[in-house]
Image (cartoon, rainbow, N blue to C red):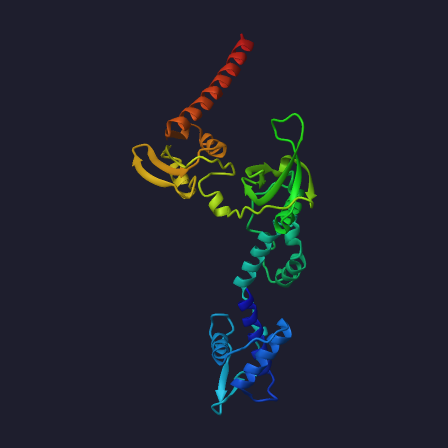
Length: 343
């Protein structure tokens, strides 16, 4: 990021120099001007090499940045713009640029309730105002799935800040199964979103725990307790699961059959990034994934109803079968009640 910012400062400085036609600019002059500008912006001496400024000029001349700057050398040593009144600030915004920027704004607006994005609100507003008038259609054409009534979103900020500032927190938590709320002192490590719900991964006495934010009642920072950072890498931690429920078990090869109608869906939207197509059958296809079987995987499988069959491992197959059998029993009991009422 710093190198990109420095490059933008140099481009702006070179542009200012070349727009000043009252002076003749050598390469050394441009080097000095860039060095002075970086000192002014960064507050420290930054050595700008000859090669760096030469590459900057080359980039400005090219279409890589969209500048196509008409920079020419005259009398074999001086640099100038060959077009009067040219400036990289005058680059027109194309219709495609406007559409891309508006869709980017629409995506960022989805996170308007999170304070870590609120600092961008003024920037987004100015950007939105700048491109809005150029857009032929004012309606958004990207829509993200979200639940405005989702509980627990107000706890994202304090948990985010606790993780960022390495603070221990007390969470007042009431699970769906508990009759009363309980108090937990945790060392928060990660915020995790899955299936339009938010979770916090933390540790209690070196034991990992995942809590749903919509079940949290209150959060209190515990400044007197020293925070322990477990250096959790989210990509690695959730590598072998579907969802958020991680166990200490080793991942298993889960093999399942999907009927012909749903096979394209499963191919284009895999259950897990380890998914492999094993073979196609007359009426469907067989897949496998390497994961830790958990609650979220079971819910995913059950969501396919009679379109899927778990083949391996046997324990997961039996669990799915038992759940389907219980569902059948409930449906049958209800049908019997309806039949009795009709007699």
